Length: 174
Image (tube, rainbow, N blue to C red; front, side):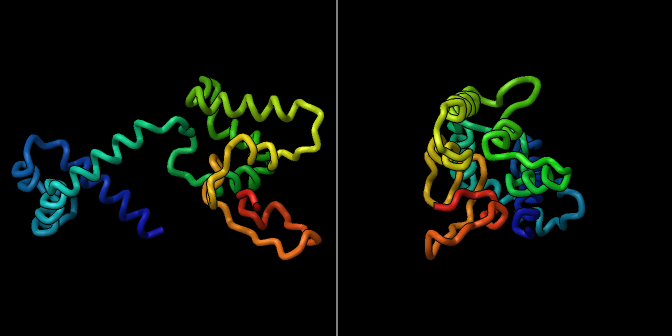
């Protein structure tokens, strides 16, 4: 939690730094409540080749994302818990729609395509559960369920063990 706050604070510092025409100009006007000495260190960091290279790579990678969502910086797990706190229990397919669709439409065409694929499979008479449909369509990477965040890996010792959905933290057990 602290690392996330620091990351956000550093982002605010960098946004302020970018409002200036040159690093020297930025160094002359420290950010609110930042000492001149600390601000100078920040400016040196932001002007470094390493920082610029990383920043450019991150910008390019964000541009390559085929899918984005509407839940902002809120984690999927937190959003799911808030829905449940409001008395709204949704399965993985409906949760996908809630995080990728608004009355204005889908966030990306790929998000819509994946949702429609899940709905198509769900409409067929098959014994697949929502979790199984979701897992099949989202081609789950190891330890990560697309659109649901990092999942808790559950090792089932025997098939007789029944794992309640809540214990999975909304990830998909293997």
